[in-house]
Image 1 (cartoon, rainbow, N blue to C red):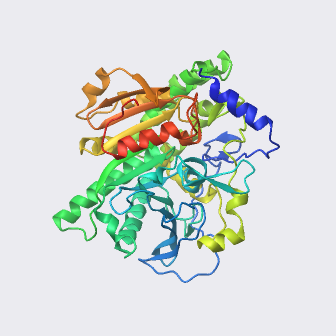
Image 2: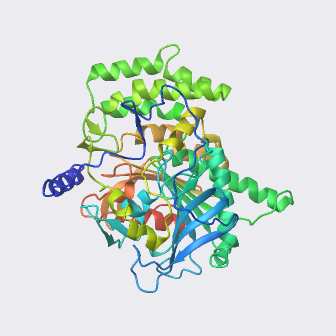
Image 3: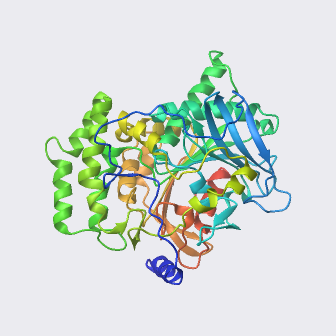
Amino acid sequence: MLSSTFSKISAFWALLAIPVATARQVPVVDGIIGGVPTTPRFHEADATVVPAATTPGKLRVVENSGVCETTPGVYQASGYGDLTSSESLWFWFFAARKNSDTAPLAIWLNGGPGSSSMIGLFQENGPCRITNDSLSVTLNPESWNNEVNMLYIDQPVGVGFSHGTTTVGTSQEAAQDVWKFLQIFFSDSRFSKYQKNDFAIWTESYGGHYGPTIADYILTQNAAIAAGTVSGTTINLKVLGVGDGLTDPLSQYPGYISYAASNPYHSLVSSSTINSANSSFTRSGGCRDQIQSCYTTGSTSTCSRAQSFCNNNILSPLAGNYDVYFILAKNPDPYPADLSTYLGSSSLMSTIGAESDWQETNNEVYDNFASTGDWMTNSRPHLENVIASGVRTIIYVGDADYILNFNGIEAMISNIQTPVTSSLNATPLSNWTVAGQAAGLFKNAGTFSFVRIYGAGHEVPAYTHGKLAYGQAALEMFNQIMSGNPLSST
């Protein structure tokens, strides 16, 4: 049964002469997945853009372009939130297909660091999905905007269609810019009505850092606004969702070793490669010690060296010849289809108001994060603060994803220290069904939920399992959590 997704996708792609898409969310540096440039460099360059008059502190919007969301009567808007005269974040808003005025508002952020949230929009959970020839899109019946207003943001500055001076190099700096963007968004007359609605952050991959950090920052700012020390709009944060995320590297890196050796599908590398990686993790001065030193000192050079060492000696070699985002495919997997041709169309860009050439991942932004060592910092304290505050939180993961696998994520969850910890650790995983179909394993504790989803790779909503439709399990999870409920079988 667990091999059904592989059989479907393999047969599907065998029928198509599709060019292989080699780019994905995490850059490959000098042959190393998630590597660090040999000479650390921090960029403060301006992206090449079409000249445009920015409006610092305001939005520039194209309404109802007719692109992607073609459901009659459903509002959409795309454009820029100008943080400053030289820093503009791209956004694309889709109203809920049902009851948009009262529906919650959720933002979606992809990871990288440096990757565009158009990945999530067009490959995963948006109103449309890219076709397998990368040339057009089709309406997505499993879209997350069925019952929720969705706001996709390309961040930090320089990512995707966003443009400007690329100065952000840490998750904390990214959080500050996202908060600033949301202040601009809620102050706009077209979107101010959503300020009173429930608000959610959903993210994946490097979003394991982004999501908890942004959520915690919003809570801090809300408290400061209430205390009168900060001027701004309170954000009604109710939900945090993190998929296949990097949050606590010290807890998660041993998961690469165990997952490569044993997972629901097949081993990834030889026993000698696994033994070598294990030695690199455990030996004195090895990966474990370097991550711990990063946690203890907070030194950018120490943290950056830890990223370089651990990804050179553990993450990258243990992947073998399998796609790190979906281990049932050889490397590289052509699914999901590449977006660059479709989003690179000058006609499309003009229609939606995009001003800079789209790129899946901005290497300058990635290099900035690699220079600060943000990758190896611990975002678990932020996650713990968010959970303790009562924000409904879900961690989800696809069981066919290697690069942020369920072994590491479940180890991270077992180390969480919150009021729900004892209940969470005492609760066993139970079978999760969607429409009567086996869909995964899950557990709830208080306002916290976790689910491991069968047959899914790194981009969970892009996959299917058994007789379920593509994205059906992910949408059921999303809707349950967004309605304020714990996960349950259907």
